Length: 190
Image 1: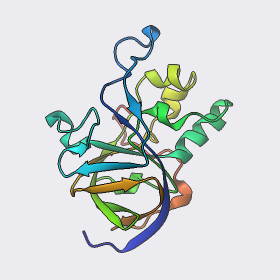
Image 2: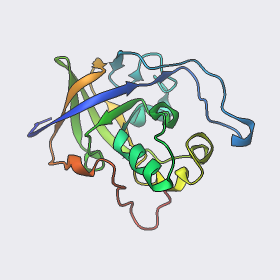
Image 3: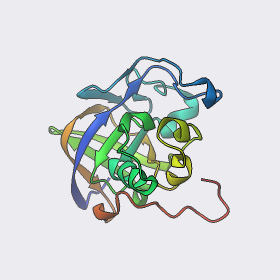
């Protein structure tokens, strides 16, 4: 990756869960699964975050780590007229502040935290599921379309740490658009 642009971001949360909490019918409630928000996580190239439900799963190799801008959740809560959401309820692995993620689809980029660099490839939008209406607020599922985060493939081994970080990008980003819904391609379901 030839990095041209450096953007200061903050890693607010690092969600690791050994199981899926949102499956089946939402009326039955979320599954009780061990979930943590550690200060540091280990990322393994091609596999994901050690201890997470997607680690080493063949079906998720190109989407083993999911990033999300907290500004998206803040904008959704404001639009719906509800108090701010607990960012962990969206079940994204890495919650960032100041990260404009949509332009990173198809790009190789990196997160640098505490001198450690983890390289990632942006795969596709992390589309919300109907569970968001139950877990966040009625209407959240529709409001998250285009701003549910970015699914990524880890390209290098390393550690991500909560706190100040740098987003190293090969393309220019607009951090002020972190909470704005990305335009999804016409004809595609979000």
